Image (cartoon, rainbow, N blue to C red; front, top):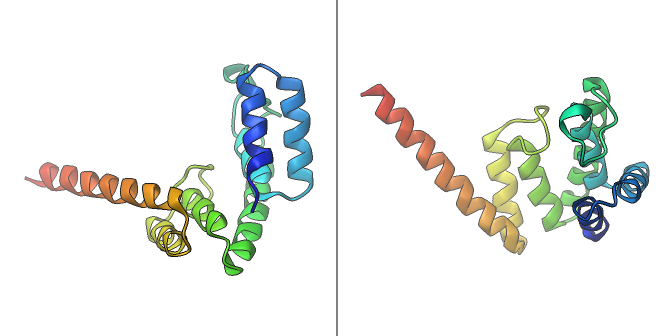
Amino acid sequence: MDSTEFSDIIALERSGRLGEAKQRLLQLASQGHPLGLLELSQRYLLDPLHEPDRYTPGLDTEKSKALADEAVQTLEELADCGDAEAMLYLARVHLGDYGPWYDSEEVAEHWLLLSVRAGCQSAENDLQQFYLDREQRQSEHGYQKT
């Protein structure tokens, strides 16, 4: 999976070129690119009044869920073909990074491990952070019990 176009869209927004970023995001999503779909999905959950520096089409949870489902299906197809970056993004989806639709630490860990095995260096960092976060939550939970 090529994430260059998606990164370019984020860079355009950061530089204040919102109109161009909006058009490129919509185009990327219309082409079925999973990162474009995920980002657009997330933006249907944002209140435009609170996000003036990003394109927000308005609140629509049904549209958000449909876009997320399409993105996940595409990512799973790519992951099944060995795409390590797709595996990484599946893990991030299941960690809740792209909305509330998918939330499973077990599934996220599975995809992180597969992505690391497939050679994704970013997945190594995410996996390390995943274990640190889990250890901290377990420690806090144990502290609360005592």
